[in-house]
Image (cartoon, rainbow, N blue to C red):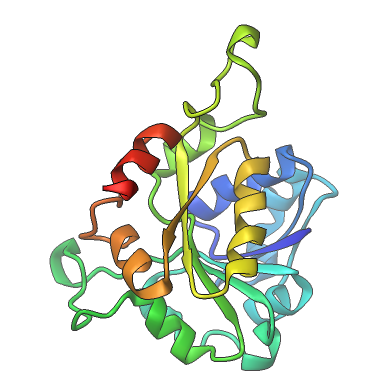
Length: 214
């Protein structure tokens, strides 16, 4: 599956590196244009390419938004994400770095309204980029020296389209993390976004499942 990473800051670049390491293709985009991504594309090799944001969304099977939340609305043409799974990995912050006041809405609910033809899944937004870079890896048994079942770190999904969440969960598992479903886009998204109890809180799969079950 070709993933379109729209936004190539520290977290977007990290995601690109671990996706390529896991055998995926990526197409990268940022606000500065494809030429600015030459060094990163060269580092990643033939599995990576660069494009403008609209082109990346159009070329990708799975576009991922990793830009500042304030720039999401109107960033992409609706046709580029029509009927596609669109991962919203953005975080809505307000003044002073505090969680934005969205009037009780989940930020991803608004993204779904801005891109009504897309199958929006909230994911890949809760983990610090340094943790994301090193905490995954191929799943092995405990006897082989890696995380046993339940001990992998959790990455979360929220959405109203169950099949879309399954697709994102498959990518998460490929990266060596444990996909954990937090529920619908509204309630599950609120759990994941800044100010929510799962934001920037590393949990193992077992810990995450225990927390959600309560």
